Image (cartoon, rainbow, N blue to C red; front, side, top):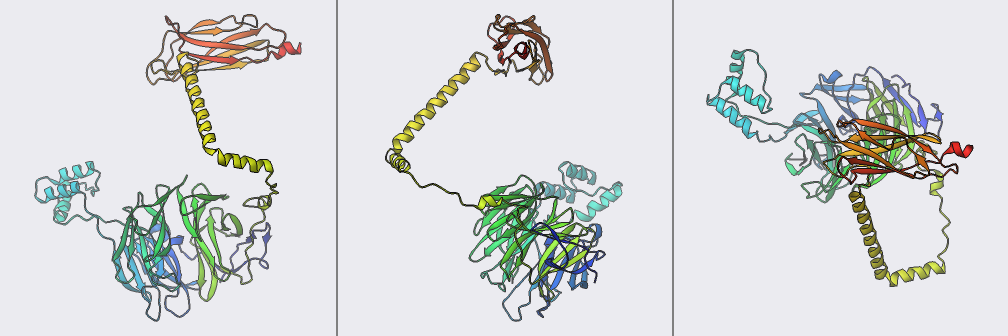
Length: 583
């Protein structure tokens, strides 16, 4: 056994050594060759002898050679190959008969493999989907020799159906002749899996399996006959599941999907009841009491209610790689563990930081529970395939971080709210007695405000007071920039044709100003051809004639030759001449 070279950071603000750390370093093997994620880890007493084992659905190095591994302590006890990559692993009780030995369910591809006493017990396969009618018709024509293999290949590829590309025509004909008599099968796969109590909430109660599939469905399986008890539809493919309650009584099911939303379903609902829209893709979903904690690709944790109300958000220092639940039954503690890309494992209760564990490599999977004969064991696997086992000290008490994360202490202080005055009481009585009349007066003023705003907007459109053209025939935009301290200013007018393809020709620019205050050597000039999308700067100079620092408005009008009404206008508030004021 090798001691893990990881440090423990207490939420109170300082790194602690092995003496005052909350964790005991039980085992660290950087060459354990375990490549998995949190959904494929499970702890269970598989033989009913009180010795809890670790079940690992191992992806294998590079996603090759997936295997089912069972660990006892730091050693691999059994190992068996899998036909496809594992999607999830879970342990559950199938029946109440003594001795109560939990079964192991491993989702892989389109099947769920159920083991009892580490021996194959049952294999559940997802029901096949109906084939596409167009694909079925093409293969039927090939079966009746109404189309040749080359035509079949071209039509299937044109319809975006998969077809094995064969170079030689003879090989293509052999492939079609071999498979055209077979029936078309369309199979989906399992993306996620969890367990749901059947009719009791006890720890040793019978549980159902809940499966999420690639064809946007949720299936609830009977724990004994493995028949489908319920089927629910989702708008997208589920990737994370969290359930609460009992199937026969009442339950809530939260599914995080690939479209970035979380859907909440209840008993007897075939479609989602609530939807939580996230701003980024979810990387984990954990239920802590009545709060759904979601990790996102924006390096943050979010807390939501089951109705979709956001409660809090915590920003992480690095990307979240994995999440899982930490539940300490002896102290009634439930917290969220988050493995980060910078080699940290952070433990949060709501948005309060409880503990930080530093690991020699980034953690890709987490599992907390009874392992061997220790109740509170933390098992971690790293990106390089290493295995880390830590044991929580029996004297360890998690204390919320002192101000690093969460609201300041002043927020928890009660405000000294003054007593209700006589004036406040009289005003309350007045509002209660004349509430209808006050509401009508408010509505009348609101309607008048809307009417005046609409009239002002209409007047601005009719008199072209807006710097943006309101007509589709003349799509123009104008804005002005004044530069200088005075008495001479540089006035730059930026005129742009906002149409997509039609140029604009024959425009004039006119400046209206108070001749007693300003002098413009160029107050009227023609505009060149405006190409769509380009910004044309038109420059002129403005000289301030007043020595008292008085400023005024200069009106800029954009006209079309032969028309008196301006297309658009801008009112420029000229700054005071600081040069004259200083003189």
